[in-house]
Length: 245
Image (cartoon, rainbow, N blue to C red; front, side, top):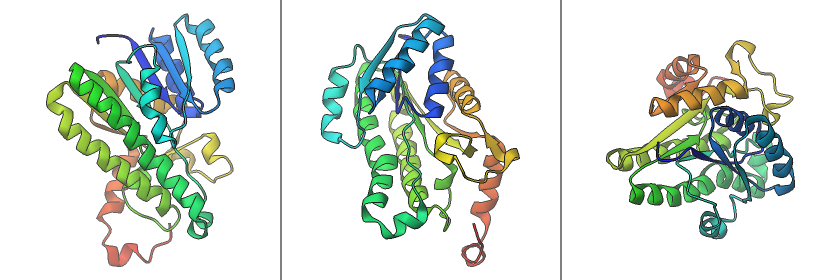
């Protein structure tokens, strides 16, 4: 590792906060980016005191793609690890009838991450090292009536990360795809989640930290989701289309 610095995009999400804590307790300097800079101030103060590491905060709006290059220029330093923890679930039924909402879901889960990660990919390729972590979703493994707008965006993001990994494999740049199943977060608040199949933000953070160190390509959180999604992908379309999900 050339330097112990990690940049977390979407740093105020529940999963991102757990990731910051995990890296902070392991001595990494933290670069945190989110839209609400005032909330980041409070979060960063806690991390500094708790882990005695440097914490830098940045205002960052993923959907304002025209600001991405200036955002990178204003970083205190280029981190060795980039983690994109930004996502927007949205309500499927609302999105079916609301152009603005479904466009926002698609841009937040696919277009925005693709653009900022592409800029870092070029930097890492040129310098000859770096790690990119993209948090996608098992929802992108197969389209279901209950969340296919969100799932289709995550499917695109998963394919993007796969192609990027193929491109950078020989450039000493590690690309990790994270596919969480259901997770207890603010985004899933109020949803009926299966207890045995639902993980915590801390579990996701621990899995990411271990996978980065072991240079894994794709991880499922929880592991049972790998089997579940394999079975779901194997169901013939003529049967699958009549199922209720």
